[in-house]
Each structure stands twice: as C-alpha cells, then as structure tokens.
Amino acid sequence: MTKELVGIIGGSGLGDALAEQIKDVQIKKISTPFGKPSNDIMVGTFGKRKIAFINRHGRGHKFGPSEVPFAANIFALKKIGVRTIISTCAVGSLREEIKPAELVVVDQIIDKTYKRQNSFFAGFGAVHCEMSEPVCGRLSGLIVKAGRNIGVKVHPKGTYVCMEGPQFSTRAESLMHKGWGGDLIGMTAMPEAKLAREAQICYALIALVSDFDCWRGKRAMDKQTLLREIIGNLNTASQNCMELVRHVLVRHRRNEEIADSGCGCRKSLQLAVWIKEEQIKKAVKKRLGVLFE
Ligand SMILES: [Zn+2]
Image (cartoon, rainbow, N blue to C red):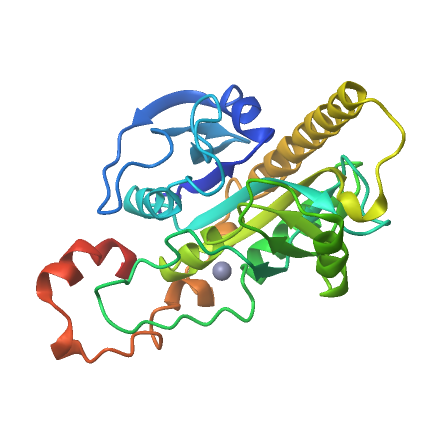
C-alpha cells in the first residue's frame, strides 16, 4: 500500500527552519480554483516519512494573517494526495501555566476572524460541516503521545482564540479572551481548521508559545530586549516542535495509524451537504471534486 503523504503547514517560526530539514525535495507547483497557495509545495522526506510541506506565510513572510490564501493551501494539499495535516503556529499565552517556548496540542478554537474566505462552498449550495471538535482527536492523540518522549513540555490540550489581527490585542481584549476560556491567542488557526474539515482532511494543530499575551502586563524591559526574548522563545519552541513532528513521523513511518482511512474527519461531507443533488451545478461540482474524494 502506498503511504499517504502527510501534510505539514509551517507557521511563524517553524516555516523556514523546517524547510531546511526536508530531504530529497521536489517542488510542486499546484493550481487551485482558489488561486495559488502561499508557496510551491515541497514534497520530500522528513522523519523517515514522505511529507508535503507548505510555508503558510510564503517566502520571506510575504502574507500577513488576513492575506494568507488558506483555501488555496488546503485545496492544493488535498489535490496532491494529503489526507492528514499537522499544522503549526505561533501564539501568545493567556495562562500562567502555559509558558513561553512550550508547545500546546490545540483541542478547541474560538473563531473571531471576519475578513477571510472561510468555506469552499460559496456558490455551491448549503454545506454545513460538524465543527464541535475542530481538530482530529485521533491525530492529536498521536502527537500528545509522541510528546511524552521529547523532554519538552507539551500541553495535551488548549483553547485557541483566533483573532483577525494584524494588531495584537488590547489589554481589555486579552482579559476578555481569558474570561471566555481561551488559553492561547493567535491569528492563523482559522479558517484553516474549518477548510481542512470541509476538505475531509484529518487536521491537528501544534501551537508554539512565543510570549505571554498582554493580560499579564509587560515586565519593565526595553523593547529591543523584549523582542529578542520573544524571538528566542519562538526559536526554542520551533526546534522543540520540529523534534515533536519528527517523533510523530518516525513512530508512524511504517504503519498507517497516522493515515487511518476510517477516521470521521475523512467523511465530514457525508451528512454536511444539504443542497439537493439535482440543484448542484455540474461544473461547480467538478471544480470542487477534489474535496469529495
Ligand atoms: Zn481525523
């Protein structure tokens, strides 16, 4: 049986670092009905497993969070055969116990974004995917398990508040996000997780903690020192995250547990398409055919 490609999405911090670690790289230029992805996709070997890597913010951090072509990225990964995505992103911590440079396997997301294309199905008809568990619990579980062996603090769950940005929160907003039950604040988990669900892909998200969000008040420190500290935390978290992803992939280099075709995420459209079959325009269905595979 051919092993499935595992998709990796690199966010702030991890993107460039991971790209350098991939071996036997082939560059794939993929076109989609939603435009070009952030980057050409790098297909190669990492952690003894074939992966397809995409740098979310593009080369040289070209796309801010509101400009990332999320739909093209997810569609392109699905088109080249990805059914499992491990995504990564930088976040601020909303909790004393989640410290800078640590990792969190996100289990819940609150979506506050409002400027982004959050569905593939505009113009198609009514499609309502189940989102009560916004990430794949099975895949997240494999990551949490692997995280016990890397000697780094990996929090097994956390609620990620996804804001539009690009500015960071005001203190009042930061306190509100805490009050909502948020553990982390970031700008990129959504609509990525929603689109992965619509594409019937198993999706897990590892958050890299760069610093505490402003609820905590900043320590008396000049801005340059603070910035250096944040970059340092992100670099440490990136190295740890790379180690974690490598562990997951090495552990699952042979068996297909990571690519379990029976996982519910891979049937997410089964009951989600409310539009009657006869109402769906043939050309539109053909254009989006990849999502239904
Ligand atoms: Zn799944």
